[in-house]
Length: 253
Image (cartoon, rainbow, N blue to C red; front, side, top):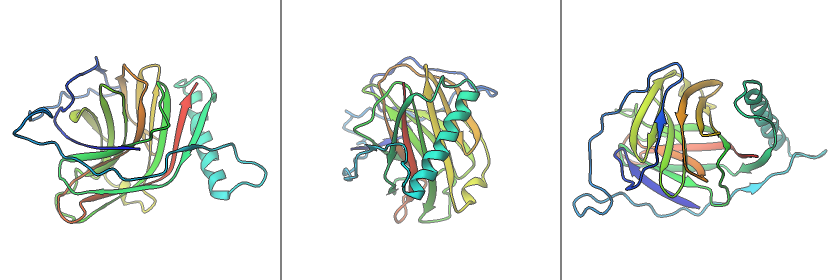
């Protein structure tokens, strides 16, 4: 298991070619405040103490005597895969299903995000899905806090967040590459929101519940590891906490 933390600014020294063209929207060119690269002696990057968590294990298709919750999770995800096939986004249900244990993490560094990557899962084409619930130590100025999903190779880290202000946001190596407003009321649901990230044939898509939030993003590189991410909206108390449940990793064959 790997963890990390990243500012909004660009902190990787190598970049892959990335083309971002939003489907149904124009992705704005983000204006960012430049900061020092990781080797700078003036600004130190935040560090995290790795948290030991169980690595994902391959979960078989439920048998005739399955755990009921696991069966519901598998069937719900299978429905999602069918939807993506019907829309022509992926070609078939041929893939490897991995159910992952629940994960919670709090992070108290405003305008930074942290993440976890699952060591035993890497792919060039994949679906990652998780239900996310968010909590903040304060209610003041935390509208930019969010929960999301991340994938990374040795060159770049790509993060997708859904924030309390209702915006879905894409970042690469910490730099804001654009956002789209969805609905600020979604996180008020006590069940949280279902986040789904799909990368197939270099095309990246991000869904919040059943709604496509971001698309038209072209990704090169890989293979990628993936996992959950927490975008902190406050440095007070425990900061921002995201609880991830019903997490599934699917390697598309």
